[in-house]
Image (cartoon, rainbow, N blue to C red; front, side):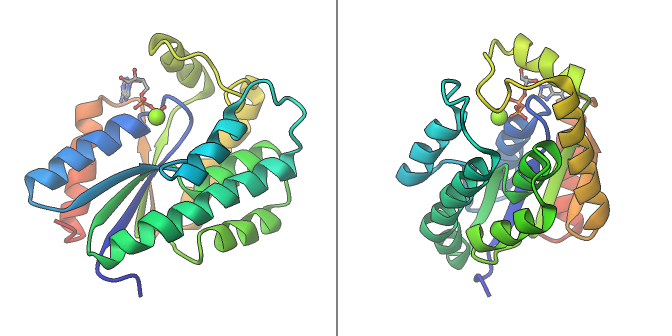
Length: 210
Ligand SMILES: Nc1ncnc2c1ncn2[C@@H]1O[C@H](COP(=O)(O)OP(=O)(O)O)[C@@H](O)[C@H]1O
Ligand SMILES: [Mg+2]
Protein backbone atom coordinates (compact mmCIF):
# COMPACT_ATOMS: atom_id res chain seq x y z
CA UNK A 1 0.00 0.00 0.00
CA UNK A 2 2.82 2.42 0.98
CA UNK A 3 5.39 1.01 -1.43
CA UNK A 4 8.01 -1.38 -0.16
CA UNK A 5 9.46 0.84 2.55
CA UNK A 6 9.55 -0.07 6.22
CA UNK A 7 8.23 2.16 8.96
CA UNK A 8 9.79 1.68 12.41
CA UNK A 9 8.84 3.70 15.50
CA UNK A 10 10.59 4.14 18.86
CA UNK A 11 8.51 4.86 21.95
CA UNK A 12 8.70 5.35 25.69
CA UNK A 13 9.17 7.95 28.43
CA UNK A 14 11.67 10.79 28.12
CA UNK A 15 15.17 9.52 28.66
CA UNK A 16 14.25 5.91 27.86
CA UNK A 17 16.74 5.85 24.98
CA UNK A 18 14.67 6.57 21.87
CA UNK A 19 17.07 9.05 20.26
CA UNK A 20 20.06 6.84 21.11
CA UNK A 21 18.46 3.80 19.50
CA UNK A 22 17.17 5.68 16.45
CA UNK A 23 20.76 6.80 15.89
CA UNK A 24 22.26 3.33 16.45
CA UNK A 25 19.63 1.64 14.30
CA UNK A 26 20.21 4.13 11.48
CA UNK A 27 23.95 3.50 11.63
CA UNK A 28 23.40 -0.26 11.58
CA UNK A 29 20.94 -0.16 8.68
CA UNK A 30 23.16 2.18 6.66
CA UNK A 31 26.11 -0.16 7.19
CA UNK A 32 23.93 -2.82 5.53
CA UNK A 33 23.34 -0.52 2.58
CA UNK A 34 19.78 0.50 3.48
CA UNK A 35 18.34 3.87 2.57
CA UNK A 36 17.34 5.32 5.95
CA UNK A 37 15.41 8.39 7.02
CA UNK A 38 15.41 9.58 10.66
CA UNK A 39 12.53 11.75 11.81
CA UNK A 40 10.84 12.88 15.02
CA UNK A 41 7.18 13.27 15.85
CA UNK A 42 6.11 15.99 16.46
CA UNK A 43 8.40 17.81 14.06
CA UNK A 44 10.51 17.14 10.97
CA UNK A 45 8.41 19.48 8.80
CA UNK A 46 8.14 23.27 8.95
CA UNK A 47 4.50 23.05 10.01
CA UNK A 48 5.21 20.18 12.41
CA UNK A 49 8.10 22.02 14.09
CA UNK A 50 5.83 25.07 14.52
CA UNK A 51 3.21 22.85 16.21
CA UNK A 52 5.99 21.26 18.30
CA UNK A 53 7.14 24.68 19.52
CA UNK A 54 3.60 25.42 20.71
CA UNK A 55 3.22 21.99 22.31
CA UNK A 56 6.46 22.14 24.29
CA UNK A 57 6.32 25.82 25.30
CA UNK A 58 6.29 25.91 29.11
CA UNK A 59 4.49 29.27 29.11
CA UNK A 60 1.31 27.73 27.68
CA UNK A 61 0.06 26.33 30.98
CA UNK A 62 -3.51 27.07 29.90
CA UNK A 63 -3.48 24.48 27.08
CA UNK A 64 -6.54 22.22 27.24
CA UNK A 65 -5.82 18.48 26.90
CA UNK A 66 -8.01 18.29 23.78
CA UNK A 67 -6.08 21.17 22.19
CA UNK A 68 -2.89 19.26 22.91
CA UNK A 69 -4.32 16.11 21.34
CA UNK A 70 -5.40 18.00 18.21
CA UNK A 71 -2.04 19.75 17.82
CA UNK A 72 -0.22 16.42 17.90
CA UNK A 73 -2.59 15.17 15.19
CA UNK A 74 -1.86 18.31 13.14
CA UNK A 75 1.90 17.83 13.35
CA UNK A 76 1.61 14.11 12.52
CA UNK A 77 -0.72 14.66 9.57
CA UNK A 78 1.84 16.93 7.95
CA UNK A 79 4.70 14.55 8.78
CA UNK A 80 2.94 11.55 7.24
CA UNK A 81 1.83 13.29 4.05
CA UNK A 82 4.94 15.43 3.45
CA UNK A 83 7.70 13.05 4.59
CA UNK A 84 6.80 9.49 5.62
CA UNK A 85 4.51 8.36 2.77
CA UNK A 86 6.79 9.72 0.02
CA UNK A 87 9.80 8.04 1.71
CA UNK A 88 8.02 4.69 1.98
CA UNK A 89 7.04 4.96 -1.67
CA UNK A 90 10.75 5.33 -2.44
CA UNK A 91 11.39 2.08 -0.48
CA UNK A 92 13.20 3.84 2.34
CA UNK A 93 13.35 2.63 5.94
CA UNK A 94 11.84 5.38 8.08
CA UNK A 95 12.84 5.56 11.77
CA UNK A 96 10.58 7.78 13.85
CA UNK A 97 11.43 9.07 17.33
CA UNK A 98 7.87 8.75 18.75
CA UNK A 99 4.63 8.36 16.75
CA UNK A 100 0.99 7.96 17.68
CA UNK A 101 1.58 5.51 20.54
CA UNK A 102 3.03 8.48 22.45
CA UNK A 103 -0.28 10.27 21.94
CA UNK A 104 -2.20 7.27 23.26
CA UNK A 105 0.14 7.00 26.25
CA UNK A 106 0.41 10.72 27.17
CA UNK A 107 -2.95 12.18 26.12
CA UNK A 108 -4.99 8.99 26.61
CA UNK A 109 -3.49 7.27 29.65
CA UNK A 110 -1.63 10.31 31.06
CA UNK A 111 -4.20 13.09 30.59
CA UNK A 112 -7.09 10.62 30.73
CA UNK A 113 -8.74 11.72 27.50
CA UNK A 114 -11.23 9.25 26.06
CA UNK A 115 -9.12 6.43 24.61
CA UNK A 116 -11.47 5.77 21.70
CA UNK A 117 -11.35 9.43 20.70
CA UNK A 118 -7.56 9.40 20.97
CA UNK A 119 -7.30 6.31 18.78
CA UNK A 120 -9.72 7.80 16.25
CA UNK A 121 -7.69 11.00 16.02
CA UNK A 122 -4.48 8.98 15.80
CA UNK A 123 -5.87 7.17 12.78
CA UNK A 124 -6.95 10.42 11.15
CA UNK A 125 -3.66 12.22 11.88
CA UNK A 126 -1.62 9.26 10.60
CA UNK A 127 -3.74 8.99 7.42
CA UNK A 128 -4.31 5.35 8.37
CA UNK A 129 -0.59 4.56 8.36
CA UNK A 130 0.43 1.91 10.94
CA UNK A 131 4.09 1.28 11.87
CA UNK A 132 5.52 -2.06 10.70
CA UNK A 133 7.27 -2.44 14.02
CA UNK A 134 7.40 -0.41 17.22
CA UNK A 135 10.07 -0.62 19.91
CA UNK A 136 8.91 0.46 23.36
CA UNK A 137 11.69 1.11 25.89
CA UNK A 138 10.43 0.58 29.41
CA UNK A 139 11.94 2.58 32.28
CA UNK A 140 10.37 3.80 35.51
CA UNK A 141 9.56 7.49 36.14
CA UNK A 142 12.50 8.02 38.50
CA UNK A 143 14.92 6.75 35.87
CA UNK A 144 13.29 9.06 33.31
CA UNK A 145 13.80 12.12 35.51
CA UNK A 146 17.32 11.03 36.43
CA UNK A 147 18.44 10.54 32.82
CA UNK A 148 16.97 13.84 31.66
CA UNK A 149 18.79 15.56 34.52
CA UNK A 150 22.03 13.80 33.65
CA UNK A 151 21.65 14.76 30.01
CA UNK A 152 21.34 18.38 31.21
CA UNK A 153 17.88 18.83 29.65
CA UNK A 154 15.49 21.22 31.34
CA UNK A 155 11.92 19.91 31.28
CA UNK A 156 9.58 21.15 28.54
CA UNK A 157 5.81 21.57 29.06
CA UNK A 158 5.11 17.85 28.60
CA UNK A 159 7.96 16.83 30.89
CA UNK A 160 6.98 19.34 33.56
CA UNK A 161 4.65 16.79 35.14
CA UNK A 162 4.57 14.77 38.32
CA UNK A 163 5.73 11.22 38.66
CA UNK A 164 2.19 9.85 38.99
CA UNK A 165 1.54 11.25 35.51
CA UNK A 166 4.67 9.52 34.20
CA UNK A 167 3.56 6.33 35.91
CA UNK A 168 0.25 6.41 34.02
CA UNK A 169 2.11 7.10 30.77
CA UNK A 170 4.46 4.20 31.43
CA UNK A 171 1.50 1.89 32.11
CA UNK A 172 -0.05 3.22 28.91
CA UNK A 173 2.95 2.21 26.83
CA UNK A 174 2.95 -1.23 28.45
CA UNK A 175 -0.78 -1.64 27.71
CA UNK A 176 -0.25 -0.66 24.08
CA UNK A 177 2.54 -3.22 23.83
CA UNK A 178 0.34 -5.93 25.31
CA UNK A 179 -2.66 -4.98 23.12
CA UNK A 180 -0.67 -5.12 19.88
CA UNK A 181 1.99 -7.81 20.36
CA UNK A 182 2.40 -8.39 16.62
CA UNK A 183 3.54 -4.82 16.08
CA UNK A 184 5.06 -3.79 19.41
CA UNK A 185 8.14 -5.07 21.17
CA UNK A 186 8.70 -3.99 24.76
CA UNK A 187 12.39 -3.82 25.71
CA UNK A 188 13.95 -3.19 29.12
CA UNK A 189 15.30 0.36 28.83
CA UNK A 190 17.64 -0.27 31.79
CA UNK A 191 19.84 -2.62 29.81
CA UNK A 192 22.96 -1.08 28.30
CA UNK A 193 22.52 0.89 25.05
CA UNK A 194 24.74 -1.62 23.20
CA UNK A 195 22.73 -4.59 24.40
CA UNK A 196 19.46 -2.93 23.40
CA UNK A 197 20.91 -2.09 19.97
CA UNK A 198 21.97 -5.73 19.50
CA UNK A 199 18.45 -6.92 20.34
CA UNK A 200 16.94 -4.46 17.86
CA UNK A 201 19.37 -5.56 15.16
CA UNK A 202 18.56 -9.21 15.78
CA UNK A 203 14.82 -8.55 15.56
CA UNK A 204 15.18 -6.53 12.34
CA UNK A 205 17.29 -9.32 10.84
CA UNK A 206 14.81 -12.03 11.87
CA UNK A 207 12.05 -10.01 10.23
CA UNK A 208 14.12 -9.88 7.04
CA UNK A 209 14.19 -6.09 7.09
CA UNK A 210 17.95 -6.18 6.43
N1 LIG B 1 20.14 2.04 27.83
C1 LIG B 1 20.64 3.13 28.44
N2 LIG B 1 21.28 3.03 29.63
C2 LIG B 1 21.77 4.13 30.25
N3 LIG B 1 21.69 5.38 29.75
C3 LIG B 1 21.08 5.54 28.55
C4 LIG B 1 20.52 4.43 27.84
N4 LIG B 1 19.98 4.89 26.70
C5 LIG B 1 20.18 6.23 26.69
N5 LIG B 1 20.84 6.62 27.79
C6 LIG B 1 21.21 8.00 28.17
O1 LIG B 1 20.05 8.61 28.71
C7 LIG B 1 19.90 9.94 28.18
C8 LIG B 1 18.61 10.01 27.37
O2 LIG B 1 18.73 9.17 26.22
P1 LIG B 1 17.96 9.51 24.88
O3 LIG B 1 18.35 8.50 23.87
O4 LIG B 1 18.16 10.95 24.53
O5 LIG B 1 16.46 9.27 25.36
P2 LIG B 1 15.09 9.81 24.74
O6 LIG B 1 15.36 10.21 23.33
O7 LIG B 1 14.15 8.66 24.88
O8 LIG B 1 14.68 10.97 25.61
C9 LIG B 1 21.16 10.22 27.36
O9 LIG B 1 22.07 10.87 28.20
C10 LIG B 1 21.63 8.84 26.97
O10 LIG B 1 23.01 8.81 26.77
MG1 LIG C 1 15.03 12.04 22.38
